[in-house]
Image 1: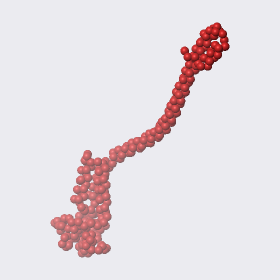
Image 2: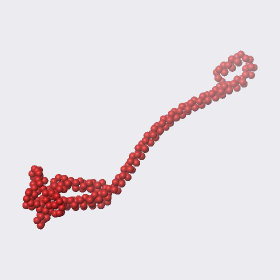
Image 3: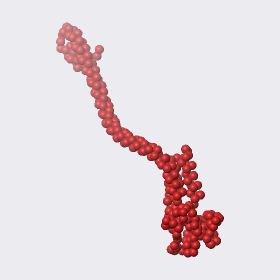
Amino acid sequence: MRIPLHLFLCLFCLAMVLPPAVVRAATVPVDAAGDTVNRTVAEQEKRQREVSAWEEERRELLETRHELEQRLELLRFRCAKYEGYTDRRRQTIAELEAGIAAQRQIADELEPLLDETLAKTRMFAAADLPFLVDERENRFLQIAELLDSYDASLAEKLRRVLEMLHIEARYGQGVEAYDARLPVGGGEAAVKVLRVGRVGLYYLTLDGTAAGWYNPAAGVWEPLSGGSRDAVREALRMAMKQRAVDLVTLPVAAGGRP
């Protein structure tokens, strides 16, 4: 066992001063005191190590707590953000679902409406002036076939019906000249037809000797003569851009023959 230096010096001094018997008598208590001091010192050192370890652990725990608190604040912030994102997504989804429902309703109502529109347009064309009859009827047949097609999209069907309506509406404007064969003089002859909007239809034979107009009240083609024939000739020349545009007088229906 090692004796501390200060204790050793004290014992040495006592040994020098006291008689040998006293020194021998004090030997046992001094050894016991040394053991006690050593144990005390060891306990203190142990406690100091424990305190140091506890302080280190406490410091680490505080650092961990601080990091966790920061992480918690970040998570709370993100939760609030994601809640906002979720609300906006829910709103967007609700709007999309409402739009889809509206589209389905429109589709359910639009498909029969397209068929009805085609039927009414064909009825209107049948009661209209008889111009471009084959061309218009072929267009109606093509659209009818499209509307009956399962593979055609509703958008394509709508586009074609709107296109048909646009073409029919344009027939009410402008002037047009085209070739046709019409009943003339008890037979059939090749003629030039002049369409003036939906106001009137007129024809002139290719040799220019005969002219006529369509009487919508009677539903037949009737001949014209004299000045009316010349007016049809001049109007056809203007429609085909063979002369400058000028005023001409053409017969129109007014409840009977002009």
